[in-house]
Length: 57
Image (tube, rainbow, N blue to C red; front, side):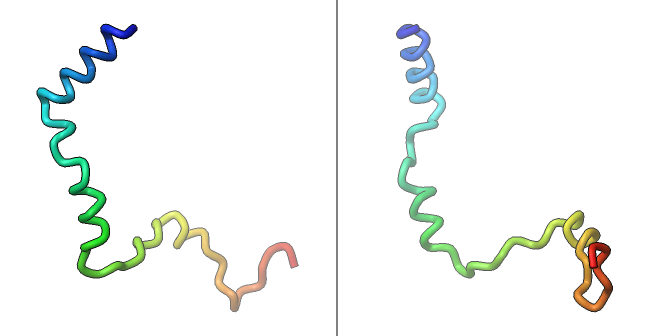
């Protein structure tokens, strides 16, 4: 099992997986504008309007 871990570590070093560990963390902080994600379509279709009578009332 130790040999498998060593091989996985060596593969990650060779393929560049461990080159920029801080880059992604810093990119999150320096993004331009923080906007909310769009609402999924399935939630828009299943939304009950406030003006409509709700089925449980």
